Length: 373
Ligand SMILES: Cc1ncc(COP(=O)(O)O)c(C=O)c1O
Image 1 (cartoon, rainbow, N blue to C red):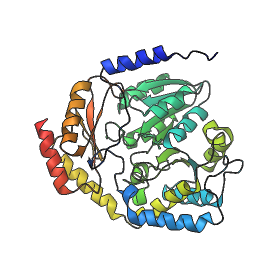
Image 2 (cartoon, protein in one colour):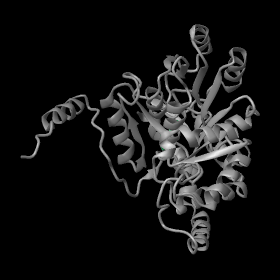
Image 3 (cartoon, rainbow, N blue to C red):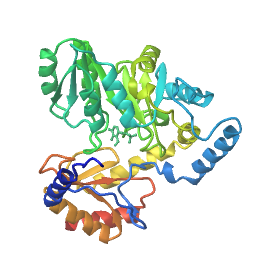
Image 4 (cartoon, rainbow, N blue to C red):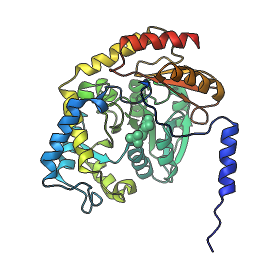
């Protein structure tokens, strides 16, 4: 007889979400103006880049396969991984880079593998779920510190045991604000802590050729571990951990999210390489997005000071935030509410992402509508 599965328990949990107006569902939108995706530099929709990837794929596929057929350590490796990793290391001013299937997996790899029993991880309270999930998989002690609060962090460093790891994002995914990287690097140096920076939302947008905020600030020698992801401004998919050759070798040997998974496809690897090459020869895209950010912030609508493409308007309450997003969607704008429990109760919001393809007219219309909310 088939074993009964706990459907009722699942249904109860789903009903509770519905009652709290926080039920997540997957939606496809067509024809709305995109102020929601992470395609900040419009690379995901750039036909020149698409054609460059097609061409590179046609050239390489003659000697390669559709899927990678195995993990990197068995049959999944090929010369395009190595070429791309060398390119990434050079672009991000690091000794080495190691590709991962996604940013989620890269963070899981770093945080589940590096800290050991007896060590301490201090992480910004607004760290992305994949940083927190990776942290849960190791035996080190771990404590959050208040968002971007150096005093809160220093107090915790003073009490910490073993090797101290500090985890931050250069641009916070839900608030759009920057981490105080200069001060964090100083503090790490003072206490001999290892600073790990997730550059998911700054990759491509900041730094020469999209190198990220750490490189833009010239801090690459003070921050030994960085995570760059390619599903946002780079317009494709995947991620890399950049740092020393020893870090790379260690992850290859000990990181389960690297070892026990099929390597990414040839198409994904080539897309990353071509996206970086494209950005290198189209640096004006960075000026374009900065211009959009400047235009939007001059309207003083954002609830949180942000110089990144992520702008936030806090509308407390799941119901209210959802209603406001629906209102904007009815006017043709693809803007999604970010509800609790994804963000803290009371800080529900509209997360508005700016892109180089958003026209001045669209931005003006959106700001007018936002003023009426
Ligand atoms: C800060 C941050 N880190 C990591 C990730 C995960 O990256 P990926 O989407 O490539 O898995 C995200 C994506 O939402 C993110 O915002």
